[in-house]
Length: 410
Image (cartoon, rainbow, N blue to C red):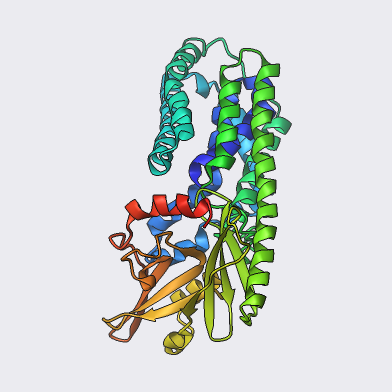
């Protein structure tokens, strides 16, 4: 999922394990631990083609092996960090304070964007509460800086290990719940585990934990801090569990709709649209085409209106065996189609991520509504594959109201 969610979940794990010994500092440490697996994104700086990033991101650092091996290593490093009193230096305090403001600023910025897109008074109220939180946050950071010489941090190696273990474990578990998937069996297998039950960005999962952490941050006594943190974790977990129920409803509607419409198929996938788990999408594999459709749990009739999408798999027959193409095929896992462009290039569309949520009356052509796509070209006999980064085709002003209207049902 998104970095804010991963940091928030890590922060909740940090406070749950180290909160009694370390107080609010445990929130920050847990947040940092929760983002460690995503440091694999820096591998892109050393790649000659960004296609390889599909393999390396959510790879070894999101695996079971990494969770088991790295947790005690980071635990030992943390013990050394505090034994040597490195946490008391002004430079360290400044870096941590900067991280706090950046993290909190990203939360407020994200809530502001959601408020603008949804035009919701509820989101506006939540945004106001978080914005006002900057004042007590600054006071708390000042107090922690002044008292840093008096604070002793003495969690055991066992607790440190457990905290990092849970931060890494929960990181790849919720990543595996998204359509992107996670290679949890690396380095032994590149099989991507993807349950497709939640979007990569869903405030209904993240916000309860953030509110719980805010309650823990400002509560004076540990029992109340623990209560708030556990409350946030519980609500978020219950919401995550509810997404599997929504997915099961969607699956039943898809199968029923396919049977009623006489569409023969071999398999299908279902996945929620961005920011929610009310509006679901599906991609269905048939012999000669794919079928794409949406269904909102608030729709009056339990049916899916399908759009037929061409396969055109023959367009890449001559490129079989090319390494970059093999990566794209592995990542698509059988859900892709191809569209030949006027200039002779081929657009490779990954169908596991749905399509742009623009109105049916939108001027954006159907072939430009795919979300995750790559351009395949051949120059002087050399095959090339590059991610399409053309955002001019996307009309963001249409997407937010269209998404909200579709969520509410037809």
